[in-house]
Image (cartoon, rainbow, N blue to C red; front, side, top):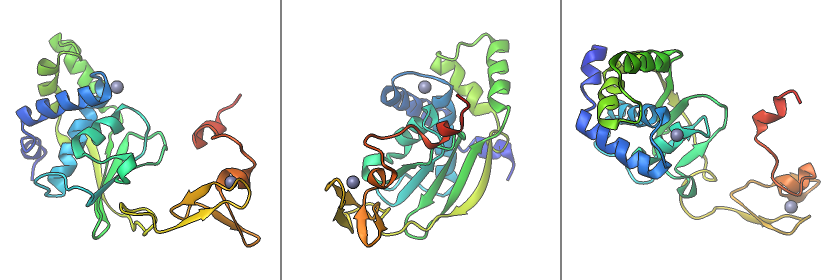
Length: 213
Ligand SMILES: [Zn+2]
Ligand SMILES: [Zn+2]
């Protein structure tokens, strides 16, 4: 199947309508909305889903930026429903995985694609914030050139899936309840991770520890 053919599988009216919803959810219209909405609609096509299923699909996003809000808007996957996981690795990518069998696809924006789209917008004199004008330009960029796609299998365990918590323990140090097996057993005592690490407040993102001060 040619890239052009697949591009036509995302209908412009659907794309514009999902963009409008994503903009309302996210708070503004930006490059991440155009990219994330297109990515989520492409994943839907690749997984042959007529619509995103409730609770039977888990998305693992690899960035805590605009793209992830766009994917949440289109798919209905939510952090609080345990259908959206964020592994903040700073990559413009997300995996869309069917819960029953753990099979899915990982889509990542290819390097340099946004600058090519931005150049097309500039050449046509189109403002990024003009949804009706900019959407056809984003959509016309062939899907297979825009996103790298590969199959993934993610075996989500009972402590990661939607539904009631399978485990609740009290931390032996602070006494707070720790759900979903997120505690550590140290010398036979359950400890929450902050107590084990000697932290009394959440720390910064893992990646930011690597920055030179
Ligand atoms: Zn944004
Ligand atoms: Zn604790």
